[in-house]
Each structure stands twice: as structure tokens, then as C-alpha cells.
Length: 205
Image (cartoon, rainbow, N blue to C red; front, side, top):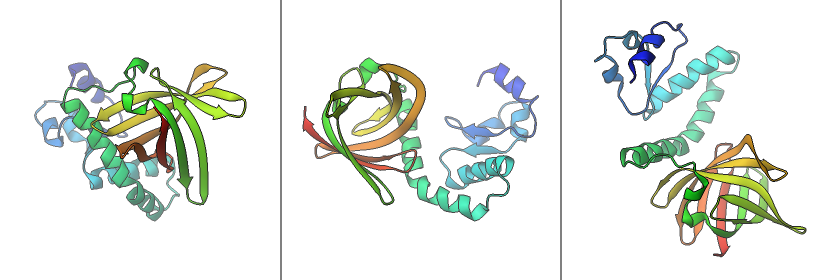
């Protein structure tokens, strides 16, 4: 932790929330800084993360019932911790997060028929993903450059990808979704940050 960060943190208000990603809460006590006076969150501990969400909820929407937050958190935690551990393991193995388009996972390249579902909503589409990370949606008028994909983390057959919205052939700054995918038996299965589940079946390499 850079000394200037620790110094500046000491001047912050009571709203400071410390999220421990690659160090433990005990490590904070090893430094002679004001940080150890604050409650810290271990990103891998469920109760810690929920309490952080509760703190944020109380700050921005105190009228929201705790039970509603708890139910939503319980539903999302399994996928959340899976993604957290994937990213932490990638970092521990010296594999930094990948954002360069020329490093898109070779597993993604090809033509896919996908089915996506959220509650009663079900949809299907066919798209080709090229080595540069372009997601070319198949339409009756031909392929459309619809999304641009970034690989955020890759460990074995597990991927976390970011879909960036493309408008008129230009990559925007709007993130459409973040998908957590697992590759098995020639297909990807997984879910995204908005609660959709996916199944991608390859129809052409």
C-alpha cells in the first residue's frame, strides 16, 4: 500500500470503507496509520461483504428493507464469490487482468448460437466473435458490430468477459454487462451482472 494513500485516508470522513483484496484486515494493524481505526471488509468473507453492502444501502437508500437486500445478496453471492476467487487466483498466478483486444481468449473465437434467460424472459441470437474481440450479431441484413468484448480474467476454462456497447461501428464507454462463463463440452454456460443466464453453443469455428 503506497504511503500517500495511507496518509490521505487518514483525512477522510467516517464514510471510508476499506475493501481488503490482496491483504488481510490484520495487515492494517501492522502499519502506523489511521486505517486500522476503520472497519475493513475481507472481500472473500460473505458476512463482511454483506455488512459492506448494508452500510452502502443505509447511506444511499435507508428506506430499503434489510430483508430485501439480504434476499438479493444471498441469490447473487455464489456467483459473486466465484468471480472474486477467479480474479484473485489469476492475480496470484501472475496473470494480470486482460483488457487488450488481441488477448481475447481463443475459446471465444467462432460462431455461436446463444440462449439467454431471466425469469420468464427468454431470447436467442447468433453471433460471430473474431480474434479482435468484435461481437458480430447475425441479422437478416448481415452481421452487425454489436458489442466489443474484453477479457477481464481467464483461468483454465473459466472466463470473465466485459461487453462494451458499440454504436455506429464505434466502441462506446457504455458497459453493457459483465459475464462469468465456464467452458465445457464445446459450449459456454454462465451468468452476467444483471442476473441473466447464458448458454453459448458453437456452430462454427
